[in-house]
Length: 407
Ligand code: PMP
Image 1 (tube, rainbow, N blue to C red):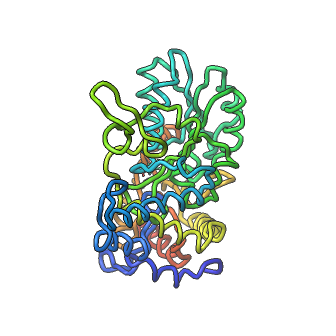
Image 2 (cartoon, rainbow, N blue to C red):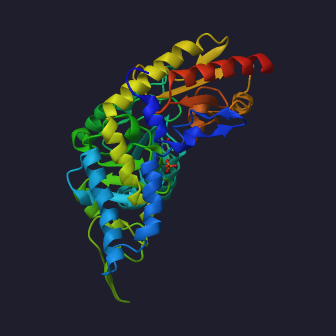
Image 3 (spheres, protein in one colour):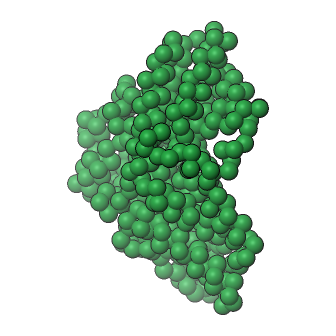
């Protein structure tokens, strides 16, 4: 492993030392969730050991220290995605909640009968269902950018789908099921010319690509900490300040208010306006060491390492008879999705697990995409910074054996 010193990196991820069914764990399910470095685990333990207090409310020392740590993550995320203002960083549970927030607040306010919402044919269910719900409620039309045979978006059709009625375009940056990196700059630019806003689902891209929301000029960007070495249950919705300020509130309760009387309630400023209730304090705090970890190694280095693994695995898998790779976009990140003639993905997954190899099988929360390729699901190996070529070799050996047994 020439690009990254994976031996050193692997020592930072204690779970990689465990065995599964008597074999060393080979973890290739990183698109579902990444493993956590010791620094993240330590931050979680430290919070409950030494800091535990509710944030923003107390004047005592613990509350102040917890609040400072909680808000430090906001600064780290702001810098990580290059947002102009720190109050543009809204804490959520994850990407799903971020998209729902936009659909239920922005969507309900701005969509009217006959308006159009554009998503793509490779969306995760979390970027389909919220739009279906608001479109149905508002009698708006949901349009879908088709996916080409190679797993890229059909951009010619996208430009035709865009009309003056298009109010929002919500697309995935990197597909979790195919690995396709979508041309979001082009999408954002074209949508803005029609006066539409754009939401980017960054669940997969935030770990693998350099994210600069000002350069992208997207209006919303949603991410999940757990896909980026951080804890589950924490995430961020970025939104442009003027848009967020004009949006109605989402959850209502404590923290999001300025003043409450039974006659009238006024709302808090950004970002707190969208952060009702006691947040997921420990997980937000422990997200910062994850960001620090990524930045210490460097996104560019991580990306080159993962590209090398993807390239290696893509070549190696061709040795297996009857393999069909699903998603062969020219621009691809870290995901190898495939089917094998005459064998069911789930059976392969079970046999691989018997050798300690964790891959994902199934529809990857993208059922319409599977339907488009006329398959029930795929076998998906997704790579991270701590994976090695030796592990890819183990996967390929496991696949060969599985195919021999199943055919
Ligand atoms: N979008 C994409 C592309 C994803 O891969 C995922 C997670 N699999 C999500 C959205 C939803 O993220 P979460 O479950 O963390 O809310």
